[in-house]
Image (cartoon, rainbow, N blue to C red; front, side):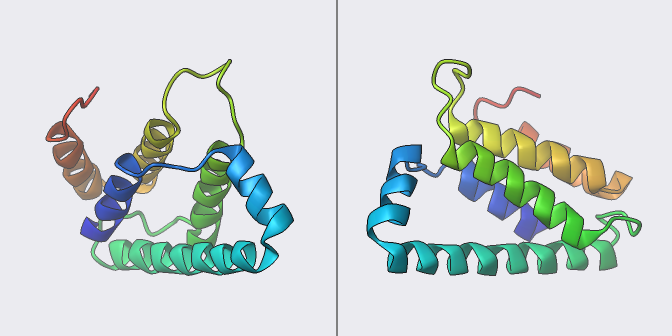
Length: 129
């Protein structure tokens, strides 16, 4: 569970490039884009391992589909990272990703896992719990 929370914390305090950056990388630097995609795949693999460890340690419910959970988070993160919603959404993209990750993780957690997540998020600056 600690690894999942560290991953969430990473997103909370990261600066994300704009959608235009990703478009330019894809268009003008395909090798860099491919390298970034491989890095994202490694991150997803790592997150899958963290979820499986969480299941073993009784922090994550046994009845979840780990592949599906990783895919849902990846899709949500990509939508927020690659798209620009300045008119419709006034929150920062990192805050949005953080909230998606925390809520998704809470949703697949056992009572033991929820207690850890709630204790973690309660200690964060500007927590809205």
